[in-house]
Image 1 (cartoon, rainbow, N blue to C red):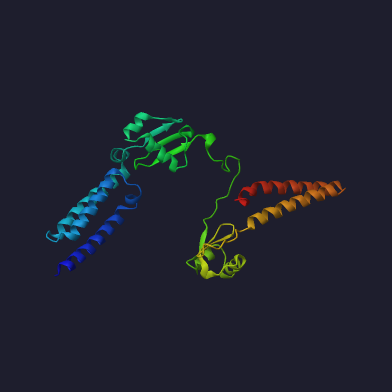
Image 2: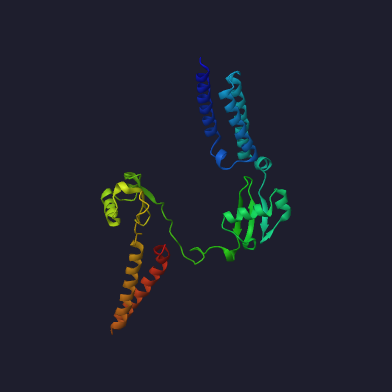
Length: 286
């Protein structure tokens, strides 16, 4: 067998084995690497490269080494799932770096981090002042997570006492200029509706890179031609304006009538509609 053909075959087999073992080890192998998993990944990759190129050595010896590393790594993962002590021993625990706006220098030194390293990680999370941090911890995978003090946290509907219904995920209805019928059907829409929306924007289907419909039925389009500006949907703003107009009309009717029963009816309806507007306004001004 020619040498080049043998190398090609060994490489293809090694790549297939590597793909299989990676899938068996799970997605954690690429998302949350522990120190041991990091070493395992490098070692298995090196052995696979050895299998591909070292034609002077029997290929099955490399497969045996890869299999042993795989079994060790897989066994450790199973052990971690079943035992917290094993997780703490192998992955270690998170270390607190900031508490109540104060940097814990001893823990920083323990993790071999400098103040510059800490500030760099905080800036990546849009945190620029240590004094604003209530709690920061470095996770076993090296990621630093921080929680701001209450007075510096962004205001959410829950802070205002508002209950917001869960919002379904937006659906991609156009990809690469092609209509996706299944997401459209999921939203209870069809191609006729989509073509109408495209006509409103004044764009053709073949010029749309991505098209997306949110939970409120608003259509957004990203065009191939970046020089063109697509007008933003106005359905929410129009609905809010209509609700406010109805409330103002009811209030005017209450002021213009002399009948007490009608005045009370219009006034109560106006007050009830105002309550509805206050509840839905956070959703309509997004």
